[in-house]
Image 1 (tube, helix red, strand yellow):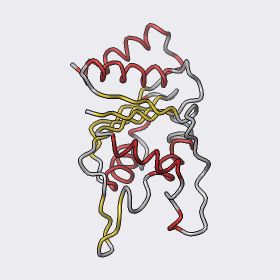
Image 2 (cartoon, rainbow, N blue to C red):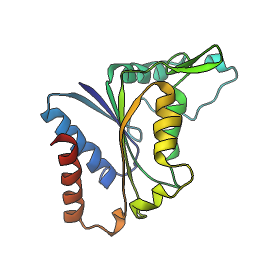
Image 3 (cartoon, one colour):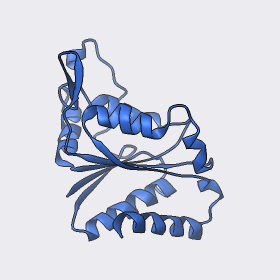
Length: 187
C-alpha cells in the first residue's frame, strides 16, 4: 500500500510531527511505501489559491506534482493541529489547490462525482482543548472532513482522531498516547 502523510505544523519538534513520523514508521514496518509531505518545508510550496478563470486551476507544475502524489497514494493521512476549530490555513489551501475539478471530482448531470474512489483517508488532529469539545461543534470533523471534503472526492475516511489537551501532557504521556493509538491501528 502507498501512503501519503500530509502534515502541517511549523515546528519539527511538535506532537503533530511525532504523530506523522510514528505513523510512517508503523506503516513501513507493514511493508508500505510511505512519503511524508510537510507543507511547511516542502520545496513544492504552494501560494494561496488565486485564479482569473476556473479552468486555470491545476495547470501549474507544482499542482501537477502534488496531484501525482495524491494519485500514487492509496491512503492519505492528514496530520495537523487544530487552530481556530480547523486545520491550519496551509492545509486547507493545499486541498483548495490540489483537489480540483476534473482531478478530484466532476459534475455529471449536475451531481458531484468523486474521482478519487478506491482511496482511504485518516485524520489526526492535535489540540490544546479536550478531545470531546470537537464532538460538540454543529459541523463536526466527521461531517466537515469525512463527508464534505473527502467523500465528495470519492475518498473513504477510515478514522478521525482528535488528540486533546496536548499542551498539558508531558513527553512520557505523549509517547504512551502515540503507542496506544498506533496499537489500535496496526495491532
